[in-house]
Length: 163
Image 1 (cartoon, one colour):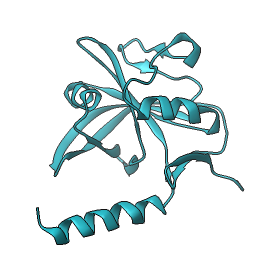
Image 2 (cartoon, one colour; image 1 turned 60 degrees about the horizontal axis):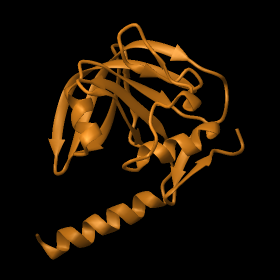
Image 3 (cartoon, one colour; image 1 turned 180 degrees about the vertical axis):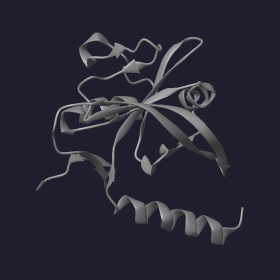
Image 4 (tube, one colour; image 1 turned 135 degrees about the horizontal axis):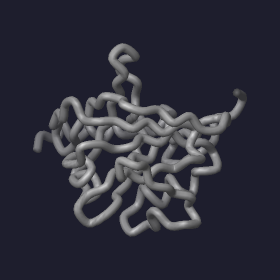
């Protein structure tokens, strides 16, 4: 690998550590049961048609999610910081009764306490290096309680203060 590319990649990683982003958990159901992961790359793409995007790395949960016909993107508030940390690490607890998960009629896990849960179906999967960018059609929106958002900044999950 080109040393210049490595330096730029490390610089990019450092730059985005300084840039706050919203936090989401994306859940789906696969052949072996539910899967989920924490994402800080969720963005609104379009309102008409309703669409969003996010990117995932090649983890086992991401591979199941990428093969699923639908998934749920949960936009998180501060009370979900520990949950976001659990879903961000391999082997963290997932879909326990204490975490408050329910199941939609379509089969995906849903977190009713999220700021919003967006059920979506994939439109495009775009491989980029060791990641995949997902563009998805939003087919259902489940609003949750009003709260400030949870953000990811400097490798920490923190509430966005001052709203």
